[in-house]
Length: 388
Image (cartoon, rainbow, N blue to C red; front, side, top):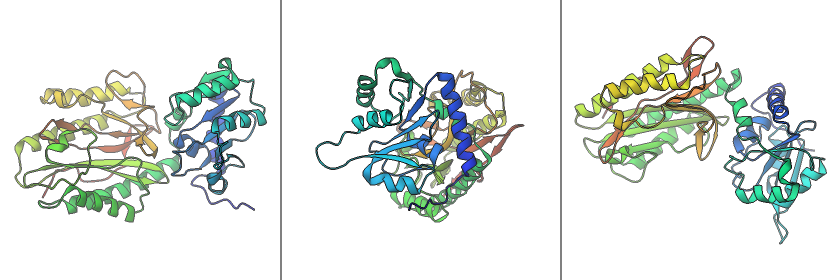
């Protein structure tokens, strides 16, 4: 007999999520929804595994409990760690391993063939080959693109989700403490990254949805760069973007460290990043558009003379995260000209970092909740440059 583990959320909350998703399915006119994104599967069922690189599929019918199709190795994990009562498997041995055929067989078994099926064509783990195979089996006229359907429901966090992001923020702050303490001339980026991971995990963080950024010197001027054995030199600027994860919910917090000489160039640039961040935070409230928050941040950076170093979004939604990403920026970002309004219950990571090629970069960032009347910082850390 399968004994279920205690799940992060109540049965009622999982059911409420399914109800919201099914309402959107009805609006799209589909009888079932096929989901491969690990974040969406976790959100609806509680099931998660580091094995999402292999094919697995959650089928959400309008009038039946969700059904998971996965490899044999994952069946017991799925039954124990989720709300799922229906788990189908495809074999892993022999020459007949065919997840695509198994997908069709599951749809047929539950009476879903010949009815409109929602697919998530933008999902990272739903390949062109898988889509074409499915289209060949069920017919093109039955497939309806429902990309982003679940993600739109996920944007508004419940009280319990916000509680988990708060805990993630605490582990993130602990990791940042460790990183700052470990930074010194003669150390290297690996030492700092190791200290960050150790401190955040000891504080309760799970594995992160995205590698933290720990970069010193000129390499800090490169986007999405992280530790790579580089020694920390005297007079380096060190860019730290730390993350924390709790029950798969993420929070992010970034700060700048200046080693050795207090270079006025980096001090001024970091001050502008912090000022722009706080202007963006102050603009956050329900009904304000993404573009309006971006504008107050971007205008300040432009007036300070650093526009060429800030040609990206101001921030993005954050919540559930599995590698390769801790954010929900594919669903909602704070970006130039965007008319999408902020809503209470959204959680944002705002990060107006400034990078200059071959020289370095500076950063201040916070994780912010949109409340009914305004905003609340979920991260808590001194907003200062750290000198080592």
